[in-house]
Length: 72
Image (cartoon, rainbow, N blue to C red):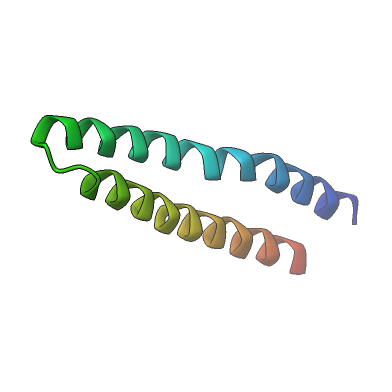
C-alpha cells in the first residue's frame, strides 16, 4: 500500500506541471502568433483549447498507468 500512496503523491505533484506547462507554452505561442498574423484572439483561444485537450489526455494516460500499477 505504501507504494501506491507514493505513486499517488507523485501524481499529485506532477499534476501541477501537467496543467501549467501546456497552458503556458500554448497560450504564449498563440498570443505571439496572434500578434504576428493579426488574428487576435483566435490563435490564443486555439492554444488554450489545445492546452486543455493536451492536459486532459496527459492526465488520463498517467492515471490509467497509475491504476494499472496499483492493481498489480
